[in-house]
Length: 287
Length: 271
Image (cartoon, rainbow over all chains, first blue to last red; front, side, top):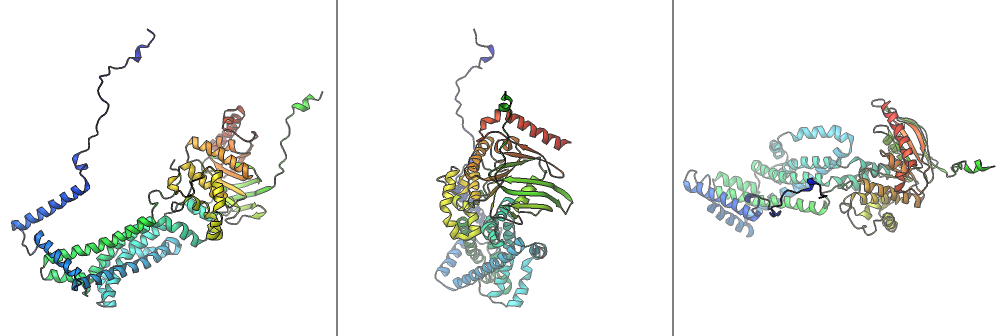
């Protein structure tokens, strides 16, 4: 009779406390199945549209035709025939363009990110140039550098430079006050502060700039070829399009995108190797 | 009877230790907005002493610490460390911040020898590895040499920062709220560790803090600052015996010291 009345618990029904969270089926589908499903829907719709006769096969080829042409182009490339030579020209333009963009981009990025002069005087002009439609400069590059590879490299580099400048400058500003003060108290020189602290701290931003640049460099090279001719893959696309060979246009674009993805993947791979710490940058109060 | 003599408090021991840091009439005015951040600061830090400065936000204590570290110049007065005026970054100053500021691409050991690498190059930094290991052992981080900072907890990261501060064997340690980002239990523990490390190396330390108990438990002298312009309002001598222990926090004497400092801070902040 000593127990207080308020300790009486509500009646336990004995029901199980183990219960399942409900996740809708579309959030549970494995990636592979989801991707294959989406591709099947895409190609199915494509096939239906071409079979229905609404669109002329000259404008939109059937998936089968396109696939046959992809195989044809692939054979030509593997066999080392004229398409491989053309692809190699475009790859060279992309590589040279990207290398040039990195050289100029890092230099300008360090100038803008490190010096008051660069930030105050150079950056406004860079922003002004960046807002111009860069493709519009293609005729200029062609008249200055000719119809050969140089004008395409220049346009590719021109497009890819700005994201690298912005990424580098932003990266150099990423270091926090404590890190700067610490380097100051250690008596670090400007170069030591740059190479041992600011550049490594800014690598994530620098790689973001490189990734955007890697996408832009391909667009620059192909635009240059469209407008300035030459012997690259862009020229093959242009010729195929004027001949209304649409399956060829599609398959050439597919192979170009493989080149683009390879370059992008290379940048990502290098980033993963160099910026292994990306998640937590400067450690402090994680508890 | 001479009993009265026996009950008289013994005079405090004469400060025989030599002066490490001397600030004379130091002031700082920011020219841009004519704000007087500091005015007429006089400070003397003796070898092996632990001093704290406490004050509300914006009382100029961070400015004071930056001037002492040679990070910014004072507008007036003299700052002398070990007989040499401070006119820039100094080898004989070790500094620690609220954030551990370890660099995530360097292992713990590489972070600790960074000051040596900056000053004397890679070879000297390699030669300091053994000393760095000894320091890691001192702070209880033995075995974490090859770990990256992301694998350390907040308290462990701050211990590594202590090692990095000590590796150059500085004459004075400037501590800018070093443990205020840690949880309270870890913070108390780290304060006791700091006391032990300072005692074992006879370090001269100067701590900036918001926490009155922290200042009292660690210090020989607490300087209470008042804002606008930043001045030292009171110098409170903490005559608690050493080594200090955490259970001293509950003693009446500790409570009286805390209350004295708190009253002074309240008076300065709201007058």
